Length: 440
Image (cartoon, rainbow, N blue to C red):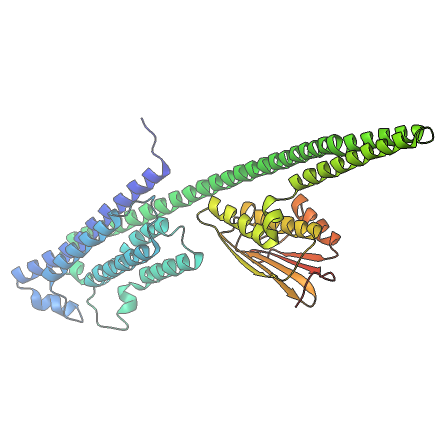
């Protein structure tokens, strides 16, 4: 036999409560209608009216209003699947309508039965479990107040009401006792089903919270492993870059310096014996030096971004931004470049570019930002760089390799950098201007 899940059991209990409340509502409405007709048939209307302080409602109207209102209430509840969470506006509208229909039925029955609010309370539990706690508490408090205040003996102090027990007391004693017993059994059954529903809901929420906690632990573990993997990958990349640089130095400077050393040694040997031959040898050494300089320059050019070399800092930043934006449709980057009259030296320009590049990469990769604002401007004879994003931010900033590299690059320029992760992530950089860099 297939075992029912919590959701299936809760749905079955909810449907059972809907059926039971239909029976209870129709029980009270039918008692009102049948007792009224029996009193009229036996010509006991005068005796019945003497037992009530106020004129009763039309029993036919009460019966049909209760029947139609409960049909709407049941349809509204059944239209919402227990496991689903509707939109906020639709959810509140549905809850408000359920409370209104329950109040209408309860009022028509002269407050003889208020258990409908338990049914509405049960329906609200699942559909509001993802709402804010304040909204949850408000709705639940309202329903509890309606439940406890929907009592004839409380409300009759403030407004005229027909005593619902009058319809039972006018009957023969045995029949009256039997109907009261049936009434009490039905109300207790509804209360027990509500308690069972509430217990299952709490159990389901406990299991659901445990599952969420386990999933969060798994996600944290995966993130930890990914960070470790990224760190290993970064170290591998650094090692490969070192090897590449070592090869470049070996192939350029090593080759050039070896040739120069050999040429100088040969010159020293022959300079006294044959000055002309020594002169030719020095010319060869000079040629090797120039070739070495070209090789070193070519190697350095490989380390410097092509856009930075061809278009300067502003053009390189614009090209980098277009590349980042081109990779993500949900990303926007605004560049406010107010340093057009500045002519940076190559090393400084390269350092500033690398710092902005690293900051932008962090905003997108780690902060998951969808918008980044970059501003470069001159103030108080210093270059100011502001990089702000709307990402996740970080209240406790622990500088890793990237932030440390940024600090080191800016420190080499005699500047300062500050990080703020309280609202998104903000990087503030101040670098003093050098003589001849900026002309106002």
